[in-house]
Amino acid sequence: MTVSENLPGPLVGASWAAARLGGPDLVVLDASVAPHRGADRRIPGARPFDLDGALSDHTTGLPHTMPAPADFERAMRDLGLDDRATAVVYDAAGLHSSARAWWMLRAMGFDRAAVLDGGLPAWEAAGLPVEHTRPRYEGPRGTFTARPRAGLLVDAAAVTDALADPAAAVLDARTRERFAGTAPEPRPGLRGGHMPGALNLPFGDLKGPDGLMRPAAELRRTFAESVGDRERLYLSCGSGVTACVLALGAELAGYRDLAVYDGSWSEWGLPSNRPVTTGG
Image 1 (cartoon, helix red, strand yellow):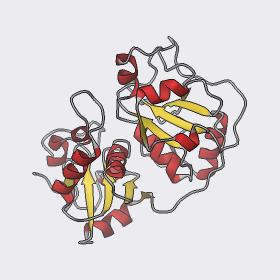
Image 2 (cartoon, rainbow, N blue to C red):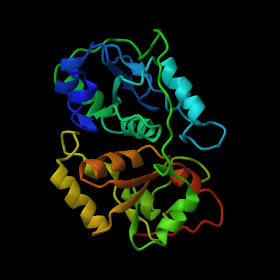
Image 3 (tube, helix red, strand yellow):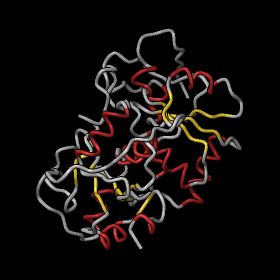
Image 4 (cartoon, rainbow, N blue to C red):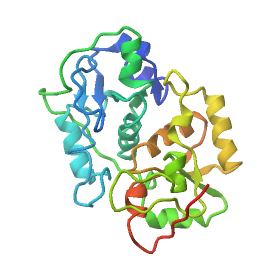
């Protein structure tokens, strides 16, 4: 049985990944972003899924938007990813930007991917080996084929429609202070606050004290406390990264109608006629 056939779901533990490390069809990707990107250690053989570089579209003026399918395909082939490989994605912060890489792969039609629960901190806490070098890859190119799926990454117009749809909920993964507008945005030039009608679910609320994702039943209760019985969820954050942690948690909780706002607050919060409100 191949690793792909045995993939237990969108989230895997360190022991599962360690038992398969070095296998011919397992690719480990480090999707850390600044300030965690560039750590001097990696899971053995990890390759750089560079969200601050080639794996964002820098023509938009926004920090982490999805590249064009051809550009994404080329970047995945440069990392040696084959269509029939399995990718395990982690980041040095724990559960932060790795979910963005997982969601991007899914948006490009690749389902053989999972997030490493707890990321590099959990790996090291388990006493598993690391290499004291940055993630890199210098091997042969892969065969990855981009097969874009509509609706997994959406724009501001789709979010505007969702805010007016009683069957949908828009969830914002930023901190409560940023959502309320009482803390400054880390990116200059953005307004403080949130979209009228959006709900706040900080991505950190999905993690336990150990930095691991909470059990599925707890996740379901956490989402239901915010969205009630709505099943269609639109997910936003600062730049489209931690919104994907909500997407991962929602998937584990049993939600299936999910979309991530690609531009997120980096777009909505720009000076414009898009409405913004403050407070809880």
